[in-house]
Amino acid sequence: MLNVDVVKEGGVTVFRLTGDLNELADLPSRFDEFKGTTVFDCGGIARINSVGVRSWMVLMSKVLSKGSTPILKKVTVAMIEQGNIISNFLPENSVESFYLPYFCSHCTNSFELLGEVKAIVGNVSTVLHSICPQCGSVATFDEDETSYFQFLERKKVEVEGHGIEKK
Image (cartoon, rainbow, N blue to C red):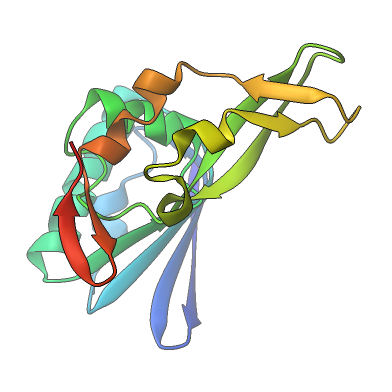
């Protein structure tokens, strides 16, 4: 089941999503009005199945067709994986922040850190290692970086007010 909390933050509607994106989510019918910028806090999405993928894509299409700009924050590893498989799962220029998975071979701790797209684009090598919060050892990125960051290369990125195409 997917829970949706709606809050207003500085005149912007924020939808906080928690739970599983599956056949019970029924996303398109849960959202009526989209105006201006619409923020989706995706940090609570744990799992996604094929019906959830379809539901999400219908929702994003609805948001875009209403002239709204979707901003995705705290995009989970599960969503990034889908975005790398399905080209229009993450609308162009929509991801603002996303989770980076790490593994510490010293203490076998797995953890995630939140990364900002603007800081990572063009600097992927700077996030391939982190300090383990459990033991203080160096942890390594726990996905194949070539495929994990693929969604960034397909998107336009705003740089100093000019849209550039990353290739």
